[in-house]
Image (cartoon, rainbow, N blue to C red; front, side, top):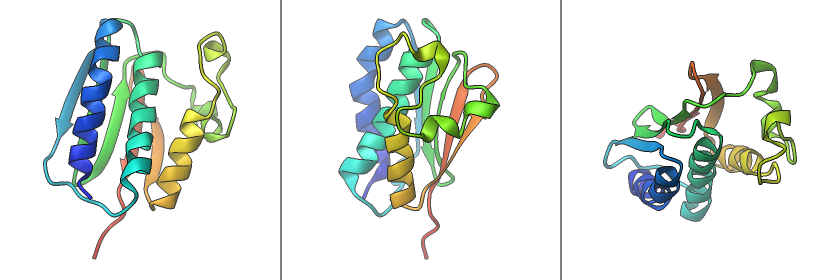
Amino acid sequence: MDLSAIAESVAEVYAPAAEERGQTLATAIEPGITTTGDPALLTQMLANLVENAIRHGRPGGRVSLAVGADGIVVADDGPGIPEAEREKVFRRFHRLDASRSTPGSGLGLALVRAVADLHGIGIVLEDAAPGLRARLALPRTA
């Protein structure tokens, strides 16, 4: 399946939400990146990552979505997630204290991890200085 097309579609759907918050949703999507898997689940995984970046990114800031041969990167320039919490946010219903006053159930990143695991995709959350970067490594194909 065409992961590049899925990423383009997700970016198109979420561009108005970013615009509402005065954010720039920048994309760097290499055409023709493919992988095996369930298109609906992979779409939901990318949508959850982009939606979180918009929601928790800085109003007026920048959100980016990049897809290439080396994987997927979604980043924002918001407050980020403390290093000690980065694995915990993948647990169902876990929310950071700072986000408890915002809408959400704490399931978005748990779903991202479940879909990534199902598809053999590695995921790491990193400091984007400022903000958060989610780096996804696609499985190697023969």
